Amino acid sequence: MQIGFVGLGRMGGNMVHRILRDSDHQVVAFDPGAEAVKAAEGVGATAASSLEDLVSKLEKPRAVWLMVPAGKITQSSIDSLIELLDEGDMIVDGGNSRWTDSKAHAEAASARGIEFVDVGTSGGVWGLEVGYCMMVGGSKDAVKRLSPILDVLAPPDGWSHMGPHGSGHYVKMVHNGIEYGLMAAYREGFEILHASEYDLDLHEIARVWGQGSVVRSWLLELTERAFQQNGNELEHIKGYVEDSGEGRWTVADAIDHNVPAPVITLSLLARFGSRQEESYSAKVIAALRNQFGGHAVKSE
Image (cartoon, rainbow, N blue to C red):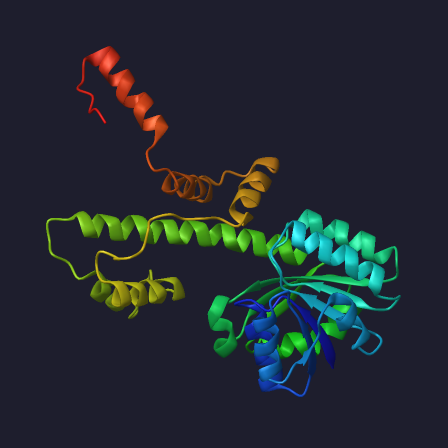
């Protein structure tokens, strides 16, 4: 099978590499960064200089897989591809797009006779070696047509058809919300250990917890690795935690469906707190305690 790949960053570039290394499929690759295209070419991809060039190098029926940031870049890429592709072609969005956007993209593509498949993709930078977990939304026929590529990218039994358009990204959204909560629990636990009266080796604790403990997980393995590389104090790492949107969307959807999701919600809010040089709300609380109880206030 021949497929076009747009977006050759940390995940997209590795996905192209895995396809070409582990199968006979052909890849035409494009990225705005010349170095990323050169790297893809180095592992066997055919280089493209633009979306137009990429489409011209694909045989009909074409399939183009996007691995670009959610939002404006995804929207503009899909808009351009809908104009460039023909009836019977396919667009695959493997990024972290909001599921409602994916439903709209599918509708716009369908109006031109173009198939649209949304693939929630998990695996990060490790996917090149271990494969990617993929949650797929779209028509049965389109997913079947894409399955040879999915089979290569995923480990055995590592992908599944979730349902109609948007369902792949919806399941991936909730997946990432759960991820927020898991990471928050590890964060709090290791901070308690770090603050204790004992001189504890956090790397060793993470290692031993990974040996049969009920809290063992791949995230715990990565925690062990982080302590091994950076020490107990996690030197050179700033405690600023960004989010790419999925946690917010999960919380919003939980609210829409009257589903209590306190763990995921609080883990999202904790990320916001990490970005403050100083908490204004904490200043308000300190001022109020001073007003009603005469408690001392620390000055800047």
